[in-house]
Image (cartoon, rainbow over all chains, first blue to last red; front, side):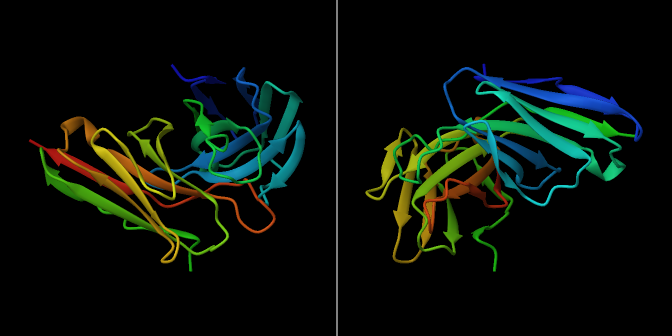
Length: 118
Length: 112
């Protein structure tokens, strides 16, 4: 079982809907990430939160709105999405240390939320 | 030039074969290196970290060559269950960035 929990596992929404993806971890990690992954492609970084503050936004369209209510939770609010936004959305967490190979940089992924936009 | 490059494959090998994947990275300041495994329609899972001295975990051996800026993964005695996509991940760089960069993944198919 993964230590990063994502809900829902599957989501189908229309282009006018508002929905949210949720992610939770209790490993004490203070860096949390949202990735988007299309079929046969690597995960593509969207957002990074470090100590509950947004530290990276990879020029993601404003129809995706991240939120980090506390150190264990990460949300991704979705509004007015397009069919091309259909993908697997992966949440991950890690300890945000400065890049040394000490195991603390290991990303732990959730099982993902598979989103279909009609 | 992409920051992290991998041969996408697929590598199609028989059970029991030895197979090796390479991954090159462009940022010489990179500090952390990992191999992840991703099964179809599943999330990536850490296979192993890669240390400067090289490391081994059962049938899997990872090596890092900083001078040539590549890492490798060797799988011995391949099993059917090894079929998956193997993602090379590189972290760290100038300023101590902890943002990971993924390679596009190498697909491995082990057949009977």
